[in-house]
Each structure stands twice: as C-alpha cells, then as structure tokens.
Image (tube, rainbow, N blue to C red; front, side, top):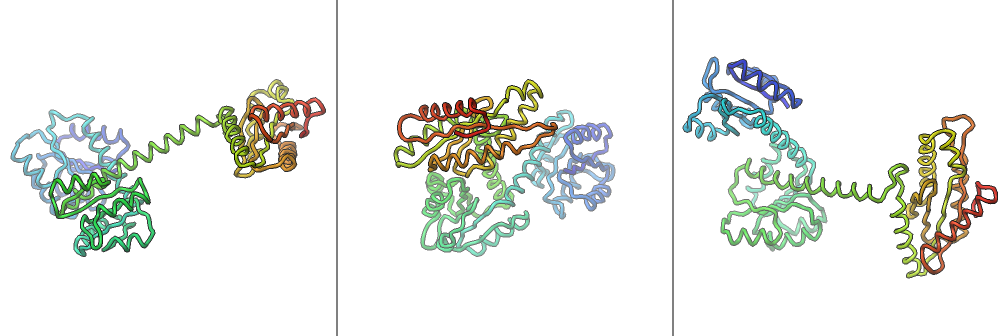
Length: 419
C-alpha cells in the first residue's frame, strides 16, 4: 500500500516511516497542503495520516478539503499533539477513521490500522470475485445498490425485480441481497428455497421496516443480516464485508480440515494412501462386494531386492525408487482403483468390480512399466513382484493373506513376476 503522512515534525515522520516500511508498505511524506495534493495527483494513496499543525494551513482545513474532493473515500487518520473534544467531534463528522494524540502514539496501533485497511482491500477483492444477486421490486433501490457496487468495482452482480425470475434462472449465487417484501412472495419464503440450493450462501435482507419483532423473525428464518432502508453506502458495504470475512474464515477452516484429513490418510513419502487407510478401504470394499455380489480383486506388490538398493546407493536413492514406483502404479490404475503403501517397499492395490484374470493383466502391466523405469545411476533399474487374489467370501484379512502367499511364491521362483 501507499501511505501518505502529512506532518511538520521530522521525528514523528521518521517514527511512522519505520513502522510503515517494516510492514512492507510505501511511505510518502508531505509537510504542506500543496505538497499533499501534488502527491495525491501522482499516486493512488491507500491511507492518509495527518497532523493538525502543518506548515501552511491547519489540519482541520486539510481534512475538510479532502472530504469534499475526489479523495473523500481515502481513509484519514489524525495524529496530533493537540487534543480537543470539539475538534475531535468535528473531524469524525468529516469522516476521519481515528484521532490519535502523539503522546499516546504507539506503533502497534498504527500497525492495526494498516492491517485493517489491507483486510478491507482483501475483502473488496474477494467481493469482486463472488457472484451476487439483488432482488427488489423497487427500481430506485436496485439502482442505488448497483451504483454502490459499480463504484467499488463489483461487477459480478445480477439484478432481479421478482423472486420467480431468479428461481427460474436456476443460477446459484454466493451473496443474495433480498427485499423483505416482494411480489408473489416474501424474502423469508425465498430464504428457505435458497438455503436448500446452497447452505453456504450469504443472505442479506433489506426493508424499510424497523420493527424489532420483524427483524428478529427474519434473522431466525435463516437470513445472515437485516439492513433497514434507507441505508448509507459505506455501512451497507461494511455489513456485507463482515459476512464475507466470516465466509472466508469458514472456507479457510474447511480447506485446513481437508488438508489435515489428507495428511492423516496419506503416506508422506509416496503421497499414496497409508497403511491404516488402505486396510480400512479394503474392509469397506469387501463389505460392498459381498452385499452387491460384485467382483473384487487385490494386488500385493513388493519391490525386488530393495534392501540392496538402500545398502548400495543409500536411503535417498531408495526414497526415489519408492516415489517413482508409486507414481508408475498410480498412472496405470483406473480412477476407481485404490492404491496404498502397505508397508516398507510393499504396495496394496484394490480393484473394485475386477475379476482375477483382469487383475492379473493390470498387475503384469504395472510389473512391465516398473521394469522400464530409468534413474540417474548408470546401469541401475528395479523390478517388482506381485500376488493377485480375488474376494469370494470371508474377511478382508484372508484376502490379504492369499495375496501375500502368492507374492512369496513369486519371490521364491525368480522374482519380477506376478502370480
């Protein structure tokens, strides 16, 4: 961000510069109103910090001038040694976001402002990427909301004058701004239908009524907020942005939980399923095959002479072998097949709806692909052996035992084969 500081004290300017630049933002300074407007014309300023004791004019006049200019939307913080309640009230009426006395000035407070402005910009950017539907039978209200959105670069918005047009469109939106009283229906009735389509959507009701019973009932019906007409543009946007903040936190939490779940069931080295998960899946697939009388086969693979690889070339090369082997097996399999690292250099493949004959074909293709792998070490290659077993009845452990016995037979009769 670009932050403009208008201040006659060099010491205060330096203190602010240190904080702002430490946060990675650009610090620009001015000492007069003339310099201020020169900077504003050349730069898109994200935050103005100004004192009240300037070289050519008092800060009150500067703030008033900014509030009536094209820069009125730029947030202004007053930092002054002069504390006066009447001046403070006047400046807040002119739209300053805070009034700080220099003796109470702290870098943490300034950091908090900068971070809040950055968050505000992030929320606006997020809002610009979301799909918004506005439903109101008042042409004037729709036009007002459209103007607010367009002034803030929000263009992914559609406007409806009745609920039926929205529902017939079969479109889904992230945010709905809905009038409480609509032709043919009410905002409350519409909420239920929209929540059925998307539980995560944000629903903002707007209405000229300010009856607390009506508002509380609407919120209990599933609306996320209720805004009374007429509304101020800034307040309207802030209310929506607060819900977007919650929306972002929810999505971040969902992504984090998804990541944790993936980590809990994935082998860290090969990025295929781990032992615990692949065995659980096999138990589930056996139950499914038994219930629906479907075919189910598995392949238990083991890399040949893997201990020799580790002993001769080191564990780093051994890890590379395991990683490439897992990737090769995964590449051959169907999307419905399941691959896991059973342990050490062993891999277990679950093949739903697959006969023994077809499973053998898959296993032999994997064996061939593994034998064709090349590595950075000259004259170095690997092979794999496998045992195929097919489910008929009984427990999943019996299926693994049969595959393991066939795998041992493959190892004892020459390796690099499937039985």
